[in-house]
Amino acid sequence: MLLELDMADARNPYVPAMGTIIEIIRETPNIKTLRIVLDDERAMKDFTFHPGQVGQLSVFGTGESTFVINSSPTRMDYLQFSIMRTGEVTEKLHTLSVGDQVGVRAPLGNWFPYEDLKGRDIVFVGGGIGMAPLRTLLVYMLDNRADYGNISLLYGARSPQDMAFSYELPDWLGREDLDTVLTIDNPAEGWEHKVGLIPNVLLEMNPSPENCVAVTCGPPIMIKFTLQALAKLGFGDDQILTTLEKRMKCGVGLCGRCNIGGKYVCQDGPVFSYAELKELPNEL
Figure (cartoon, one colour):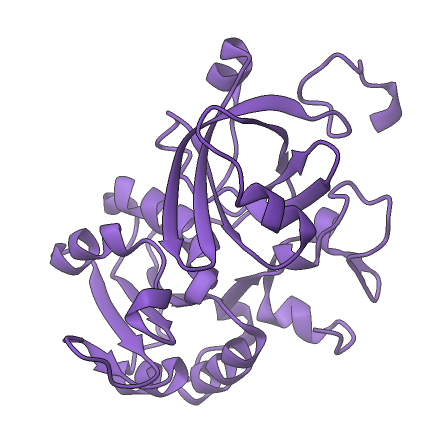
């Protein structure tokens, strides 16, 4: 039982471990990335997680919110969280500086089935901040490149200024073992890549569904039409994965805020196949 855990144990999901911000990256006007190291050196050394798992970041006196760990388990110098400014907690997190401390409850939730995906082709489809949960799996797969088939990335945003991880895009574009396509909604001066909505560009890319899995995350409206595009391309419901970490609140199944039908996102997710989501009430 969770309540029987030693409350001094840093891995107790009820008790935040203290972490220190070692680097802050301004991704876009309303998104910042925090790179955090746990203050307990042994806890940091022993920390393990799987791509897709999340953590709760807390600012004492303000509250806590859920964010995917978007660094990769293959690169453990720090834990990385990208935060869009949307409310009281995220607003406070955006005011923090290098050297400030936060509480960290992690890892929580399930993860992308990266072991089951070995040998298969992968199509990543991300929109805006939705690239954050995809990044952890993408980097993991690139660091274990021989285990996977063809890997494609379609990443879009409203404008070039709204694209997170812009400093990584040249590397992704330049890799011969990664097919990267970037798109924005409307033309912009100096933009040399695609212009068009993500679902339309996906149809132009025309990825084959044979031995392929699509992993997608982004704004709800983007997801809706991306799912329709994937269906047109012949992808089955069990060939599509997405993540719902933004519905999580406590992260340990107590508050019930993430309940959808008979599922708790924090315990049964945040990663779901589209086949699993179709069995749930339409509350997304």
